[in-house]
Length: 464
Length: 97
Figure 1 (cartoon, rainbow over the protein chains, first blue to last red):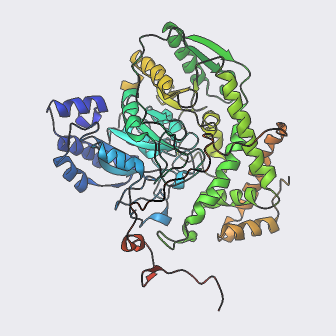
Figure 2: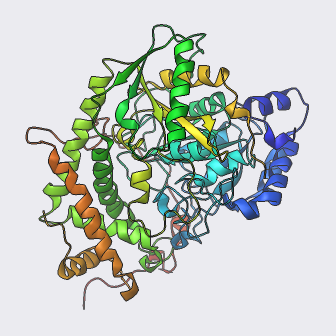
Figure 3: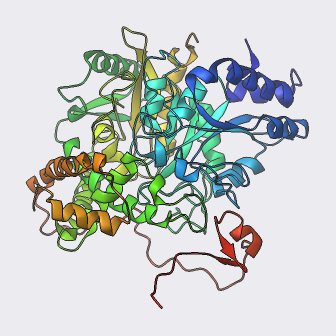
């Protein structure tokens, strides 16, 4: 096995047992990048010289000491190009690190590059990136999903050991599902937003994308914790992963029936139902939930709130302090800024923005009600496996429809995970999601971990 | 709620957004109307006595003590500016002489 194919646990152990050096590990990742990234296009920029230099002095006693990490290109990295995959920022060298980047560096990880996303994280395909579409490592005629498509593809293609992503409504879980990797979306406020280019501030949640559940949990431990620079940060100590469970006896898992919409790919429904059988064997009680609020309302709430917050957040990009002027915004950003401006404008504010915030309350209340009956939700992440390159073109609400099964939990700020649970007939990965009540990442971890321990989908590798 | 965004609305939105829309991008107007039509689905739900949720952690007025912390130097703050003048960001004039 090549070193770049190791997961975090294996890489850390190998480093500590001196089987190989941090430099060997970094070199192996760059060799994979050089071989395949011209086709995959997971990275916007790479930092080989700096990474190799950092590897020489890596402190492998640290939690992520000497581990090569790929960073989504909307996390500010001091003096390293940060573009949000938009030409507007193609010359932007941030003057400071995001809080999460500070933590990742302090934990000893080595940043090898910045990964592609939909420009400004607006999308679920990477097709709105100004630097080209990322290709799905399982089949390069297909999309990786998005917006964290570059990070998910980099992990699936073993170009990095771990990666960061950020999710506003699906942007960690959906690309992880389409690329067959693990994406852990924490509770809103668990991980600091400071220094992550703002999209929809009321749900933006940075988090890990990795090869295994433990890898993702370990990176989440490092990324999490209260940050005085983020006013909505949860005022608690950093999250710690709990001990794994040996069975799921006494646990109630809810299967929301409306998460199986008519348009769902039949193989995905079958895969989730097969997963249900695994959970039953592990001792869980499965409860069908027939009265969950239809995700169609979440699509509308998300659309209004996302556009509104985007129009405000992107107002700062005026080309005065950094970057280029507003003529550099692409079509997708313009469309979103304009709809947001419309929904916030005088005469429409109450009908759109306030209405959506009220429906958000109903969505939160609905989850509270359901979590009185069950400990967690299980269901599909996406109604389809990876769609073909070009699928998002000309569709003004492509992402919203693709992300319909992850939007409700994002709007309510809940933690969730996508883990590989099957492949379709074209050998494209299928993701299973687990959603728990706010701040209950422990339940998410325990259910995901035991499922992974009893399956081998996470061990499959794409042929590049 | 009006589902169709008129030419006049569109021009107003473009102006408020501080964007320039090229003639070949005018199709965005119809897309905005389509999206506006989709979000009408929310009217199926009664929200008369519902309080809005602006973010789920319900934190309000987060203060910090008034202590000087780490901040960017003037040089660093200006390092990314396309134009600066005597230690200031250079901008277009907003007030006519």
